Image 1 (cartoon, rainbow, N blue to C red):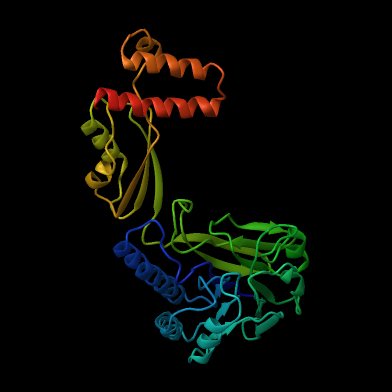
Image 2: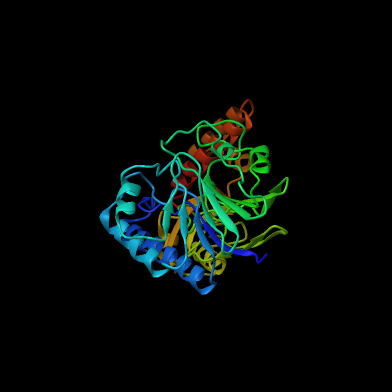
Length: 360
């Protein structure tokens, strides 16, 4: 029996706002999600896969604009010889978006409903099962509705849900997976690829999303590509995202000037196409003006988070009879009975005051 080649993706979230970015960059990111989706389908065509699996949250909401629907219909028709299967998720439960998409001419597209259904391919001896959300909240175990009808076929399921014993987003347990009789379960909902896993005789995986949506999604983004057979799976994540969100910590303790801080950050930014959050730590030599680093760094997007402290020695300053000395003594007295969090708050507040007093 020949292995079945698949491309598995999920959580594309067409229409998701690119929060935290200026409007011009938001529009660029919206278009880049489309371009990456096109690249995924082109990969499916180039690799001559037997099926494309989209495990939910294709849309960010159950309603979407006509432009996106027309775009999707056009993309699916480019690979009209490859069946495409979609399992609606909590962000895009069965409703207007899928009703409108189904009304367009996409003969290779199957959108699963709220009851389990299966499409078989006797010529290649495989079957694709699926079930979708009919509401934003689904507390029953939808995967429990899926059972292999032909144990001799390569059986694949596509479903959206979270790996928990109970919850509101179609809870899935490893027992559900093992009892399904599937050879592979393509999952959606988690935006991070967590590896190719196995429960009983069934392999399963989250593909993650195609494009990161914020600095909480800094891992590699792409699609799962490979083969499924009765003997096992040969699957891997193929990165295809246009850009990556990256968080970089830069310790500025060994710098003497603001320019040295800027140069140190520049050396840490090695890809101008990516989006960066620069977390500055350590003792700074001087005050870091807002936005100055963002304006100096050549990258698609940069924001800084200043967690530095001024190079002030409270013990030494407290010996002085100036306003600064009085303030330092007051801070030290309050720190004596403070919790660790309160001490950090006091030190940060003291930094601001001493910066002002020293006009740095």
